[in-house]
Structures are given as structure tokens and as C-alpha cells.
Image 1 (spheres, rainbow, N blue to C red):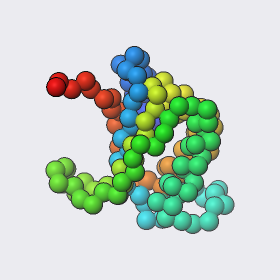
Image 2: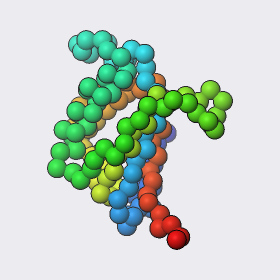
Image 3: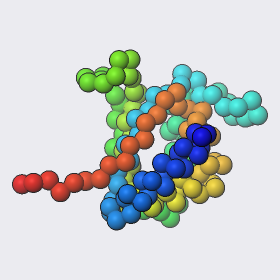
Image 4: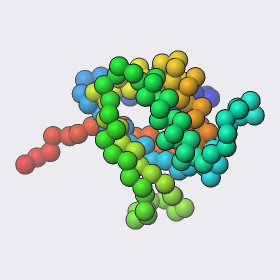
Length: 140
């Protein structure tokens, strides 16, 4: 199974599990490349992975997501991992709120996302974890 097939299968499985979940918060744990790695055909000037993520990927994502109900909830710099895997290191955590998982799914499956945003994400990131969360009803 290719990475794209794996990602599509994961999206479909999550969509079924979260069909009636209401708002979801996507936690993006990201580690940037020192220099963004574009394919040889790219005519973009060199930049850091962080610059590619925030100056290229984020605006392209916003264009692909135009008209959808989402907002950036939190962006934070990771200053250390207190409990985690040996060698685990992240640069930033980005949390995005979507009105529903279906909203995220529509964005990720929009051809504009794959054509205009995803290449910047792939160029920018050395590693990435993408976790879906919902807000539970906590006991009082």
C-alpha cells in the first residue's frame, strides 16, 4: 500500500468513526527540514522548511479550504519533550478546529489541495503526525 493509499484509507476510517462527532481538532506535530525539499522541476527560490510551511503551505491550504468552516486554534513552538520516544523531537504544534471531520475530508480530497498545498507540506516537513481529537463531556 502506498502512502497516499494508506492516508486515504485512514481518512475513510476516521470519517466513519467521526460521522456524528461534531467539531474536531486536528493536532499537527511538525518537524521542519532545514531547507525545504522541492522536486527538481520546481522554480521556487530556496527557503527553510518553516518558511515553506507558513509562507507557502498555509496560504495554499487556505485557498483550497475556501468556504469551509475551520480556524487555526493554536500554534506553539515545542520547547521540549518531557515524555516521549527516545529521539522524538518536534518544532511546532499546530491545532486546527474543523466544524466536522467531513469538512477536513472535503479539504484534503479537494484537487486544489493536492495540487497547490500538499507539495509545500511535503517539501517543508521532515516528519509529521496528524491526530484527530474531539472534546469529551467531562464529569463534573
